[in-house]
Image (cartoon, rainbow, N blue to C red; front, side, top):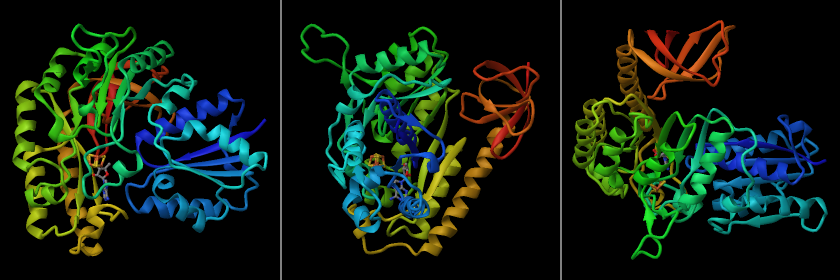
Length: 440
Ligand code: 5AD
Ligand code: SF4
């Protein structure tokens, strides 16, 4: 029996792809192992959004080169954009496969094992094929992601995703509902509808409407349908693009009680000049208008965001605009990054690159500010009761960790096993990155 080990880097989409790939290989008779030293086939599933990931991958492959694996495969976004260079830099790699080709992996591994091919590179954009080729998920968790849409047509000038994941496409509603039903029937209670840009979802409707040959559904309709499925207790979606976020989706939050009052709307920068250079398609005033409208329609809503500091040409004044926007929104949780030039993207060629030292300084200031807002939000929850879904055990005995509707970690101690259970928890105290509570 052939064994394989997968190491995944990067975002939830990569975790989702890796799970699909593992299920596919197991259905073909392979065994998954958790130790790379036990594996015949090593698979590295990569992310290329920021530079660090490439260094990490090459050092990991370098570190493991003495392992007796018969096949080394590198997949995902680095393989898509730099497959040939990877082959030059790491002679031990046999297979390089892009994010839309992983359904072909069993065939390629077979070819290398049989000695028919020493090296295979595939960066085709097959789109739907991978979803149709993969079996149903084996080990279903309490909280599961479903890819509803993939790829991106936005071409933000800093971002590699449109080049690695390809153009935007939406999975048909029927396929998504089938996957959702399977996950719920097999133990999932929380579903996250996932994609690079879910609010531009336009998937083929499950039936043909009169006058329309091929009606499509938007995310609002999809959320309504998933929320009706038996067994679902909590529903989320991510990631949204501010320019595509419309009022219909805001109202859906009031119509579906199990849809969490929390959404991720990455703004990236608070400076209109930089937003234009980034090709984001909105101004900071337009962004703020949408968030305020959302709060008006759904007062419980909370927001998270992504930020990039040190985009080419970002001045002190531009950076202050970002701080001013943060001050106005008050995010519950956020992710911020130093701009990292990605080869092949327009921003990498811009002349006025910001020195690393300044990026570091700005990142620290922004992260400190965001953390203060996060702590304030956490503290405001003290003495309140929250519904928490418990996912895992904590480090200490009898300790359990769950998430509230705002995706914050909630830590409790309990004599009873809480994993997979929804419980009302009274929040007793707040830390920087979690809140501590007691089951009521
Ligand atoms: N440099 C830094 N951060 C980036 N992101 C995307 N591309 C880059 C880049 N070149 C960030 C954005 C995006 C998140 C997933 O990664 O903030 O929202
Ligand atoms: Fe990248 Fe912009 Fe598309 Fe997001 S919207 S994936 S940042 S190109």
